[in-house]
Image (cartoon, rainbow, N blue to C red; front, side, top):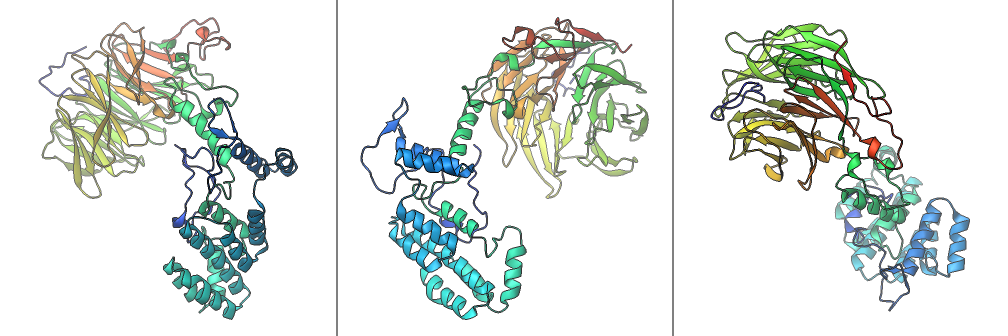
Length: 588
């Protein structure tokens, strides 16, 4: 492999907490007055007034038995087990609601609005603002139901004599007042517009009341589900090796993944390239893998349902090493970038080259796709950035004030931001809509970068054997750093991967693959196997347990789970035989 002097920018080859589901309406006119946020800190609903020492259960002595039983009762009713819920109330002697609350809820269900307002005041809520907000909600529903039956006089009286004196939500009072001009059209609009509650939907009023009143008065419908789900999420998020789907979580035992959930076993070695492999990338749908090489070819590999990989097409035509191969958004085409040569666009099904992109006198050193797949972008040897449509018509071409050779380039999925390495130690984030630029400025030379799938983060590979994770929402800031891999002369590429891209993987000049935990920066595993520098890695977007690495030894290694060493699991390696032998593919 050629050596890149550190005084020059390396060319591309150069190598280069869930919200709680309450079931409430999202558009209540009085939601802003909520006094109950059901935060994780409120593990159980608090009583309105001090009730002295209560019986507790559990080893920590923090779970109040009465609250625990009420929450279970609420869950039973929510699941439709009414008889069981009633039996629990009777046997435990702990009612879900006291008599006053029961009366109040029944009055709301029956549409007895005047009585319900009176009962509300009898509950004894300490927060006057909450009482006013709940009263407003009840009277608003009363107004709407009077309006529906065209009882305009009583509706006006409710608005003027009962709602207005509360002195809250004046804007809504004015809206309701204007509805008296044309009641039928207002009712029609209210009942047909998404997000508006139907005038006869008293169940919606009950849901809003759950949001307004303390949880000790009306326990949120899905409180038990929320507590259990939160517990699972906390266990999942604290698991350093977590790399399984949420469907694998269980209530029967505490969740803890082992290191065996990280790809660490070579399942296949792909040997069809005849020289150093510089770049590789999985397709968005996970059905293909593409690679490019110093041997002036690129290869499209096909991945079977069982994970076995076979050669689909060898793309021949470049006259110089192919420094990158990139999938179109729909995975039907790929771009290949020849080292200071041309960009070619290929059809994946046929393997045919359908177009070449070049500009007289200058050549590309990096390339990428428009997010809609209808154009391409390229960093050129004259330090310009050019854009073409698919037919090769030049759309834009410019040089930035800071631009040197653009060794890496990409566009965010919304097409708003153009990201490029525009200087030795600077990444440009150019807002194409506002035509303004934000900069990521490093102390060391930048060799490559990789965007996260949500376009909110960027991995930056540096000359000093460090990878940095930047948050690029708003003003860019460093989130984490990753160290341990080796890089002295060549461009080494890294990637995000695994469950919710919770891991960072990278190649290394010591022939190994390195994997870190993204949040903590902890080095989890080093994967030996290659006989030359590992230039690029790619993690399958659809298979959490498939990782690919490209090396100077001319091979691509496919990494998967080390199932042989897993206890109590079937000893079967996806894409290879059950005795754990490595499958080799040379394209024959």
